[in-house]
Length: 70
Image 1 (cartoon, helix red, strand yellow):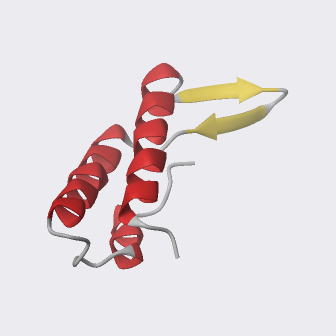
Image 2 (cartoon, helix red, strand yellow; image 1 turned 90 degrees about the vertical axis):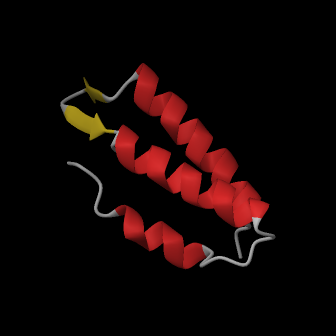
């Protein structure tokens, strides 16, 4: 199982990727990063969970982010 700390690190990396290249096309294939506001909300949720000793929803919180933009 992925820990809240691991998810926070991955979320921070996703935020950085979102800020540096939100949407791009290579060889005719388009890639869109997650929405910044959703990532920020998820990061806050993870930080709250970590500060509360990991007693939050864990991986279930990840599912609340919604579908990725295409």
